Image (cartoon, rainbow, N blue to C red):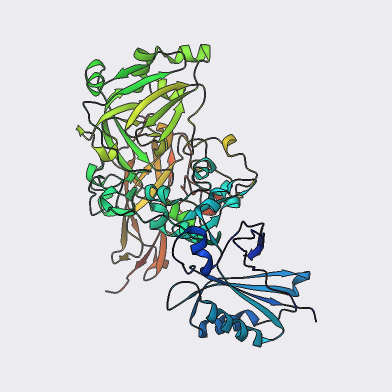
Length: 606
């Protein structure tokens, strides 16, 4: 009987012979020279290091049911922690390799050669199998640096691991361009900035699936926590629902949402991509420039004294608000927001339109007749860049603001001081904070927040971006109609014969809310809620949310039982909310506005 041989081969540091390794059903060919435990000193000049894992490969001429679990149990009896296990097959599945990535439970590292030999002998007693047991390959930083293009394969290192991310590039939520900055390098410095990768835990798990070996010569860990780029971030209100601390992403808690139509500044929702900049107001300058203009530099005092102060009440909502509901259909890529990634403020500042008119000579009529500009690109000091259509920026009823006040107080650092852009009715990411440049352009902003996948609405059928030309898909601007039940909360026990309900509704593009409907019988019948604060806004210039209330009798059929209460809103353009989340599911989890549902229980006892 011809037996299959193990596919993991050690490579000589001196000879540089290529080899192959099968992991996860995928064969990586032509590895550069690598060595195992006893070869590290000759390669890196450091003391010998035991790799973090060992690879055990069991080759089987004819696979049989239960062999994988038998082998796993044997490994556990040898006090090994199985970090990963795969089967790869050939010849229709009869020939197989069982591949295990293991650590010694005692040391937390790879297994020493003596124990590997003992394990190999034990595994071969399971039947007609042949086993190899080798240490996890070790690579140097120079090995990683040699893999920085699609031709060589794209490798990165993270802590003490080496990863082949070639096939993941196209699906990176932050865009391929940003990920390519780390090609052939360590991603540790990038993840120290984008710390949500580690705090949410999903990114390290995804990365681990792409691991191909250990890093022989990792850089020392950063020493001083005082060097953390987030060390000077503002303190946050303890009542907020924190998703990430570095960068901060926190939502307005439901318990505080309905207390005031204008959201108190300390609990205003926070969506950051980077550390909060520290800016000296006396040194601050805003540069206006671009197509057909001469650059103009304005100080904060210029904006306050040379232009008429305007005030706009506007709600800002993150594009991922309610993403957690779409995650229940199928996991999306992004922060699992509840419904609190939304807040409302009275903003004070100057109209962007008036600044562009006086500093750049732009007018809506002129742009339409000459076609000299199509977009206004706004740059923040945190490297955030986004753009809005020039028609929105110059519309006399668009109310786009360069804001320096929030709720009657000077704008604070957290929310964009000294100047932030407020674009009423448009997705939150376009409301750029810490604005330093405003540029007139024929093209929309570059980068992942505008042209990348981050704020693109894909079809529910798109689960992978392979072959998708992301730049051709329009960026999210105005948002769809939305409503939420804030009270009662899920799991509330209703002890009265009526259920008291409160919530908010909002629609993008300045479309006012004309009706909010409530249902207690799965949408068979509906009752109109009473619209409260915000209902008196102009129908097509309604930038802020509308509060609503309803008192609904508990149907006899639901007394003493659990049931679901629903709400849906209709805006001034007669848009209403879709019924089910699966109909609007998308890869990035954006624009979730399906009927909002809350499960409650009625207590019929006296």
